[in-house]
Image (cartoon, rainbow, N blue to C red; front, side):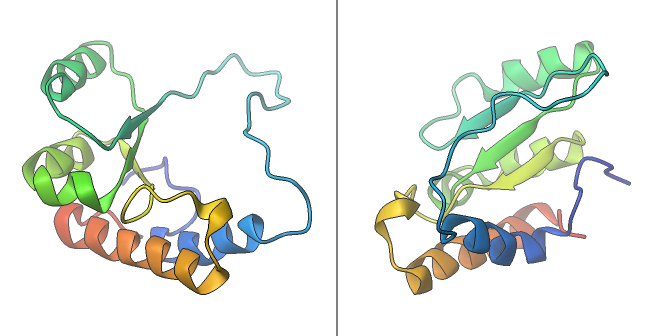
Length: 129
């Protein structure tokens, strides 16, 4: 069981949309208030795969689990690698269909970007709870 998903991926699109269209300005999360010594690592898999296998080997060697943010552009081009990432136990995060700037899209387009991204990720990796 992958314990890295805190909520089911099929619900993520709806949750993210509600955050993106809130009245407050969006800010990246740089830190979380905790007494635990932890670090979160994520990778944006959008444009290539030349180092992905080597990266997965290094992460496996050191027993490190990370989050890979995948666009449909990348998943369609590298479906086997997307599956390898999921099979290795890494979290797969939504990163839209086309790497769009969500702050410039209307809500209906944001929903489509995230829902279609979640659908393809599920089809290719099976990673959905």
